[in-house]
Image (cartoon, rainbow, N blue to C red; front, side, top):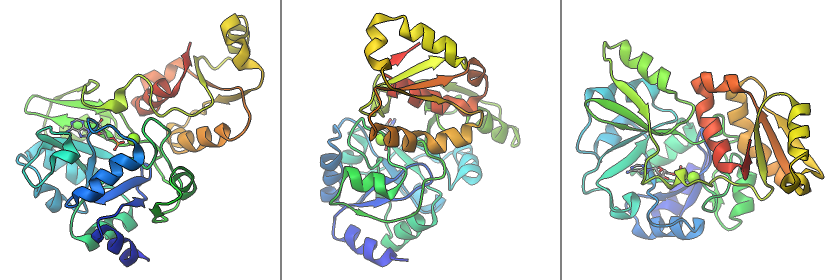
Length: 312
Ligand code: AMP
Ligand code: MG
């Protein structure tokens, strides 16, 4: 593995695109302000949008926060390495550039052997948002990253296995708040804590400091039309009868979401990127009402809602 090469780039205060199980990240050492600024500049990301710190162990995470509760420990033991991010009170080893001046930091241990080895070899966590220009779809392959940022070094870790960004949670004594839904679900969190006899409310509430929650985000160039039905005929008839929508319906790509949320999450951004490069007039995504009953769909439907230009 070429870990040494990428460690050197990070030690040189530059950035590297890294594989994770969720999406590719654009990483810089948390101890380099220069690298942190390059992340924002490269992505054209506004400074009010804080970054997630990626660590290689639970012990390392504890070095950067002032409060690590029993609940945090249980969740870390059960879900790390994995797609679950904690928002925790930070100490002064975490720069304001990372947290947008907030007194909390978002932190997680990603489940990708190469990236864990890179962080270990660097000896310092990395801050890494998704490796795409602000608001664009997240990259799940090295090709996607290179297409966005041809001049950035990319550590090849294959295709991302989860495919959508991590679940982000805030933890306090009385409740857990899901700021961004993902493939670690509310019921998984609750079931895990129940095993330790901890019963705690878990609610979902978009964080005002989380611009992933801007109305439109993760958007491809080709407009997405999201339609809640699995009856293609019905959807086509209804949309075609809407005069404003006609121009988007000359040559639509139709994606009737299959039943397996794990697969849909893994394929979601890749498919949007692929279709974007072909000459379709729109991407019509059909999904079913029953999906909303299974919380494995929450993260996917959240991304779909942000990515869609039109929803029916
Ligand atoms: P990305 O790295 O692009 O997946 O985005 C990171 C996201 O994490 C931000 O857009 C915020 O939504 C969220 N985040 C990071 N730090 C905090 C924090 N201190 N409090 C709440 N949300 C945060
Ligand atoms: Mg992002």
